[in-house]
Length: 161
Image (cartoon, rainbow, N blue to C red; front, side, top):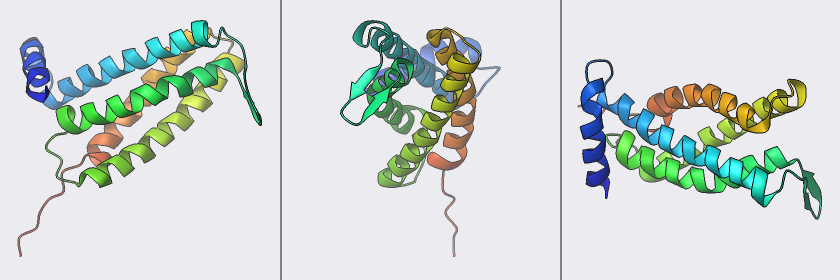
């Protein structure tokens, strides 16, 4: 499956080969696909599962746009990690457990940013929640790419002694 995905990406990479490295293209393609999945799941959760209504739990009530973010996260977290580990940053020599922990921390920070930006765009700016999600995603993706490349999936340089 990994090789099939890489072959498909290599085919579509050809027109972009002069403007960006293959890794950046892989990140944009995989991250973009996972982001579209996340936005689609958010839209379905918000509009059809939650019916734009508050989610009442035994000890907590969650606004529908925040609950939809969390519902989409349940799917986009594992798919995002697997795509990044095996397709985008496959040259990383960090242990899988370290990558997963770092990815989880990064995603936690990104979820916090999602929460803050969604609250701001929906409740302060009064944007429609799906538009707010798209704007939030743009901001969070920029932060995420830099952090994943430099921290989560970095290549540890081996020092000869």
